Length: 285
Length: 313
Image 1 (spheres, helix red, strand yellow):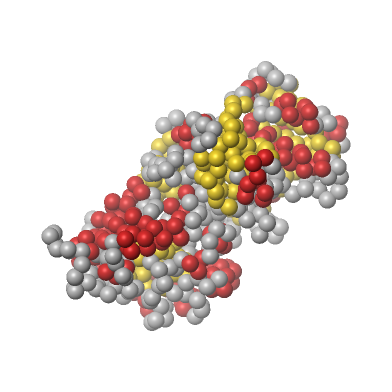
Image 2 (cartoon, chains in turn orange, blue; image 1 turned 45 degrees about the vertical axis):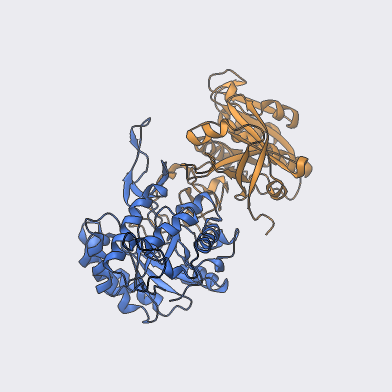
């Protein structure tokens, strides 16, 4: 299997702060070789004999061929595990598993794509942008966050994208507001054929609504809490409508993290919809 | 039942087997224990289903699964094809459901044993789990034993959330259990202090990981002391070969690995290798010689015992 994940001990090459976020570049040839845009990587936090049993799923910002293959992982400090990762130094080693998940599907023919990123979700869009541009696609970026230092990758987006529109909720960078406020204009101006999005669930929900309004396909990469990242713990489930019209609780780590936006029941995330397959007292039992 | 090695997956911790097969050959496991299979498909509990606690993991997945028909059609044949020995965990809300499920499994080829998940809520007893009461547990075990082919062992999986685990274990054996598996996750809870709400959507969940290992060792110890002839599969926080040996010395003849797999996809083959190394280092020719060895009276050497049970499952 080409996309089959591997576990490896990677040496940290560099660490850096990127505004409100942390980035670690790790030597991981086996993961870099297999990586496709949209894939993620999990790391074990806390070192040997750690008391933290779940792996942390991290976004891959960049994959480079140096040292046989490196991956740059981007994360925000949200708890004890990510706080430990933020303290990792160059030459430390990390236990990595990846690449994991289903990558973004790419269009067969050149088309115009709008890439929407919220918070550090934008990190996963640059590898995607490269892949799309290699296929002759035009790409336009819309990146947003609550404040300026939480917008990830604005500079790189400006270099790569045909256009780049930034939004912050406090108006400290770009337009004041949310990505969904400016997205209709960007789609219309670019005459976009497809939207790709990665970020918080509420943003993905808004982006999907806009794309549906325009009648264009939307691919979203969801962020759900995971324990294992390999499909065995069953904790990262999201209600998703299948080809057959039946809603199933799908694992974000293996059936996702990329889903067709209009198939995800955003309003029902965090619940078991009554009509989901196997819902308590539901019709489909 | 003879298994080629004593390391199994714990129920509900190995997916369908396909997920782990990306990392190692599932035929290298002593046996693959499935998630608890139910009669009908189940969507499980809402999210968040998981919370990390110190050296532990709380979960409330709610037995999400595709139901027995899809299991027999898509999952069991795949495991058989891969050469895995499959122990099917079964779950239900009533004795009748366990009976129906066992009948459905009775003719299926490729089942090495059936493990009865007695921690399911008994809908006829205000949702209290079968495992809390010896007679309710025995009734379920007997119903499964009656439906499953005589040469397929039935394993009763016990909960530590009981006043007297030995009494429940004895009832299950009297009800026809060929072996015991312990422990299922004890109930626990965590509260998100920032949100001031329970962390799990379900409120409480099952606690697993090294945090519960002493509880598992105590349960296995007590059951082995009271029922030395009954094979025990030990589980609860096994993360290394040393942890596995601890449960074996307490009286388990096989160990299951659960939460460790979430942290390390290779946990099962790694723990087996570490266990084999430890046994060799200590001069054991056979695993059976180590089973329950910690029970020997103080002052006696680790060798030369003649009264050990030959506890192949």
